[in-house]
Length: 238
Ligand SMILES: Nc1ncnc2c1ncn2[C@@H]1O[C@H](COP(=O)(O)OP(=O)(O)OP(=O)(O)O)[C@@H](O)[C@H]1O
Ligand SMILES: [Mg+2]
Image (cartoon, rainbow, N blue to C red; front, side, top):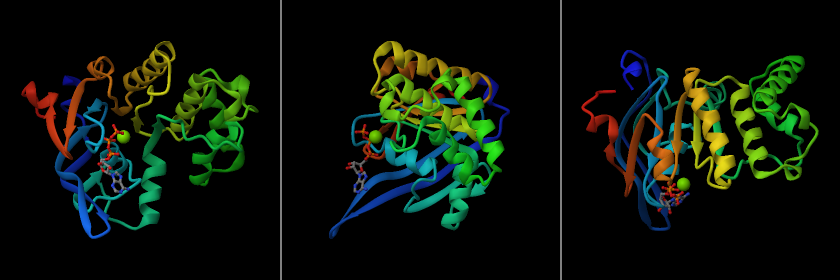
């Protein structure tokens, strides 16, 4: 935690709310969220089902926008055009989801190449970076496999390779071990820990208290609000 004190803010949210329109009524999924995360932090987001964790993660990752409030990501105000938002997302953030979100028709090399294609890199560079990334997760031997031909743990490793391929500064993971057995889940967590040691900012949603306890900081969400933040408990202003 202390090593983060002199680091720059990568996430700065002020009075963020998210309101879903449900027919004639409004549903407040997030209300008045104020949150700062610094470069290099390893943050776990916990809370009951329906609390607003994924909604918050989607806004952090620019997959969705807030209804109200201000969100500055790495110094850039996210109240901008969809094209700009997609550019920020592709260049700064890697995503890992519980259900992997791999495209079934593409082989694993093509899956990992996809975010690199969005960056508009030349083809040989795209291939080189995708292979390098698959090597990191130990799957460069399986590049022609389709996702359906892999185990759950292997699929999640492909998803990690895809998240890493663009060398993002931040990894967002929504229940990354939720569909895995405990041993494979441990491998995935160790990979995330290593990435954090290398300087990546990690924000992970988990419902598992033991997994959350491994993070530097635990933020609890309930009914769309931040109920507690362990960095505040320790009196450390991050
Ligand atoms: N697109 C949507 N339209 C309307 N309501 C939504 C939408 N997405 C989420 N919600 C509602 O917002 C609330 C927060 O949802 P969210 O997915 O963020 O919860 P969560 O904390 O991630 O839960 P879980 O642990 O079950 O994944 C829920 O009550 C949900 O029903
Ligand atoms: Mg969720």
